Amino acid sequence: MIGELGRRSTAALLVHSTLIQALTFLLRPAATYRALELDVPGFALGLLAASYAVFPLLLAVPTGALVDRLGERRLMVAGAAVVLASALFLLLWGSSIAALIIGTALLGVGQLTCVVGQQAVVANNAAASRMDSAFGYLTFAASLGQAVGPLAISLVGGAAVRPDTQAIFLLSACMGLVLLVTTFGISATVSARKGTAAPANSGKGNVAALLKTPGVARALATSATVLAVVDLTMVYLPVLGSERGLTAATVGALLAVRAVFSMVSRILLGHVSRKLGRKRLLVASLVLSTIALAAMAVPMPVLLLFVVMAVLGLGIGQPLTMSWLSAQAPAGQRGRALALRLAGNRVGQVVLPSVIGVAAAGVGAMGVFLASAAAVGGTLLLLRGVRLDD
Image 1 (cartoon, helix red, strand yellow):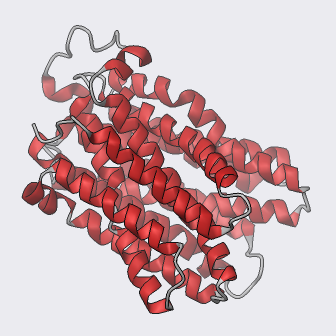
Image 2: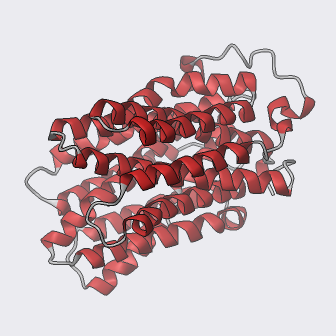
């Protein structure tokens, strides 16, 4: 149970987290499949992929400010409605690349709004001693949704090379309706800050002032680096497998192992954090991730590679940076801080892969994993002098 939300409200929040990620991992591939059906050129596929991130990058901080001003549930209702509109738009009018770009952009905005609202609910309702545990459960639910979405594509598509996208859009619209209804199950008291008055300066903060808050910039940089490296692992593991003669099934199994251990680590996050302390746990997580990424560059038996991927899955930098940022952000500005984190993650997902790709040019996947290890290891320097366990 998260703070004073109650069991039903907590359950609704976790279902909401699962559904929004499932919808994202369902609609985005479906839009790509529909684009392939339309025989769009390669550059158009790039535009389609970028359309998901562009508007959230621009709207992240204003959305966080709205969460702080209007309350989490109102923004989550709006976000769920936009996601539902995205699915319906793709279902009814997704027959051109322009329509696919519009529908995907709507999905990005709706997903951003829902996720900022979810994280702000946790940040504003979980006790400081339970923050890591609460964010662990929230990110576990999100990881579950990221597994459910692709599974739904497999069930609808069957053995076909290209699934029935119209059926996927219809399924997504139904899921979007459930998402919207679920939002009303989250306690309305989260929007009222449990009846307490907001601090006098809660509405006056801006990005520059927030970044000057001790620990905030470091938390943002750590979060962006860890997430970008996770993305790189997803992209370059198939390349590594190809270079070493691993089958696609083996690569898929390696990714599945990482996902399973990631979910387990999030469930146990609160317990382990209380035992070791947040800073020790974050340092241990970053060290393990650095070692695992570096080990990926070394040729090894497949069985040992599965062990390395399991260790990589234990990395829990993302939920820990959420609780770190929530603890550092001034009262009344946590929604804005968490939204700024999401914006920073988007920037990291664009900039870091480009930098690492250039640095590792000509070396292959091995160079990418070594550079990724260096990037994650470098975030340990950001923890010097930081107090996370007050």
